[in-house]
Each structure stands twice: as C-alpha cells, then as structure tokens.
Length: 222
Image 1 (cartoon, helix red, strand yellow):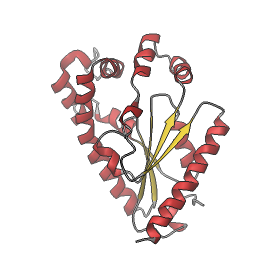
Image 2 (cartoon, one colour; image 1 turned 30 degrees about the vertical axis):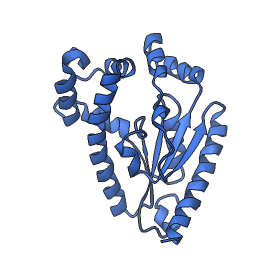
Image 3 (tube, one colour; image 1 turned 180 degrees about the vertical axis):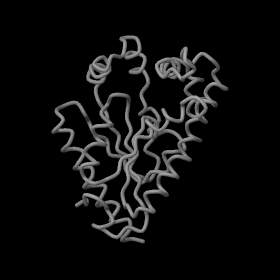
Image 4 (cartoon, one colour; image 1 turned 120 degrees about the vertical axis):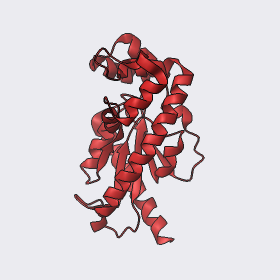
C-alpha cells in the first residue's frame, strides 16, 4: 500500500493528491492525521499555521484587527482565539468575514505547501483544518476526509481541554458540515469517531485504501 517515506516509491504519480482532513472542533481530526502520518503521508496542520499568521505583525493579525478592532485582542495585543471563536459562533457576519479573510490566506498557504511537496516527489499529502469545506479552498483537494463525532463526545474532549461550559456550547452550535453540498467531483469519506481509537484507526485505514484505489484509477484513465 503506502510507503513509509515517499508515496511515489509505490506508484508513479504525475500529480500530487491533496487529501483534506476536516470536521468540527474536537471531532478527532488530529487523531486521523496521526494515522496518516504513520502510513508515511505528510500531514500539514493548517490551523497551527494560521495561529502563527495571527501573531502580532503578521498578515492575518493585521487583517483581523483592521476588520474587528480591539474586540478580538487580549491585553498583550495578541488575537484572543477564545473571543474570536465565540464571535464566529454567535455572529453570522463575523463568520462570513473570517471566511473571506481566511480563504485568501488559505489559498496562498495550500498552493505553497503543495508546490513544496511536489518538489519533494510526494504523491500524497494531507492538510488538516476545521475550515476546508463550503469555501473556495475546497476545490484544491482531490479527496476529503470528514471526521464526525457526537456532540456529547466532543463536549467531553472540550471540557477535558479546559474549555469553559459557555465556550463549549457555543462551539457545538457551529457545524462545519453545514457547508457540505456533495456537489464537487471529489470523493468525500465521512468517518465516525464515536467508539474506540482502534475502531477509528480501522475506518481511517479503510478510507485510505479507497483513496489509493480511486487516485490510481484516475491516473490510469489519463
């Protein structure tokens, strides 16, 4: 199946296959990414990159302050992600504004990362983020893994991560799957993370087998 270092050592791929990993907060995206890494597929955490871009002086920080003012800043001048998350969950106009700002940044990041991995001769690369569907960035991906989990399971994880009851409830109101229209030609692989980690690992690896087969068949038809 997949090689441990370079996927191109297993099958000759002319183009890179970008796999998106998305889902609600605390649904299990990072765990899914871990399983892919163990199969030799590089996984880029786009959300971590956005955190860096939201640092003082960086482009995302400047755009957020310009659009929302001091309401999203902490006392040190940094973006208060807890405040921003609550605003996104509670105010539709803030959600649309952030989607617009993030789409521009995401397009640049995804394209640059894809170019890098193509230069390294990787055939498969995964990118993980909460915001990969229902916007322009969705079309960058050949395959999409969507991680779902029951609200009570996600809330347990949120509280275990020291989120407040108020913040947890607000985040659970926002469902990233609302933007999922199944209109694109890419394949969606919806994985449920409600049982044991072993069960989730099994379903993730089964999805990888399907992705490998679909991408192989695409290239045979070219």
